[in-house]
Amino acid sequence: MADIAEPLRALIGSERVTPATREVLLQRLDRPVIHGGRYFEADAWATLVAVCARLLPPSSPVSAEAAASAIDDRLSSGEGPGWRYDTLPTDGTAYRLGLAHVERQAQVRGQRFAALEPGDQDALLTEVARAPSASDFDSRRWFEMLLVDVTEAHVAHPAAQVAMGHFGF
Image (cartoon, rainbow, N blue to C red; front, side, top):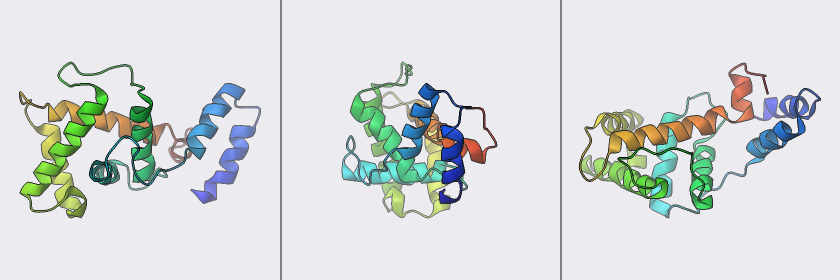
């Protein structure tokens, strides 16, 4: 991201960007990446980062840690996205249950999720995304919520917007 950071900052600082938009874009650009969750315990944090790494586009300027940080920030602040599936508990509880579910499925394969080969991680996440609703946990809806959050972390980042050819801010 260093190669586009300076021109991107120049664009954000230009008169083409309103002060309110500039403030939001700079917050997104300068959001510190945490290397361990504030909301999540260490094991869940490691799983979340590994899951984010599989869901982000390979060319994303947003790291898996940055996407996980965005989710962790939202949950630790108590903010919600403004919607929730009625089959899921609150966002924080849903994340804890979902990440624990991913780990249980990985344990069936004999390893932690982060230690699985990328293809095995993808297969496991595909199973989670396609699983029929269960009475104890709706992993399919949780995966949709997760995918929305990771996509938002990617698409909302100014460097990703520029990489996608969007200069409309």
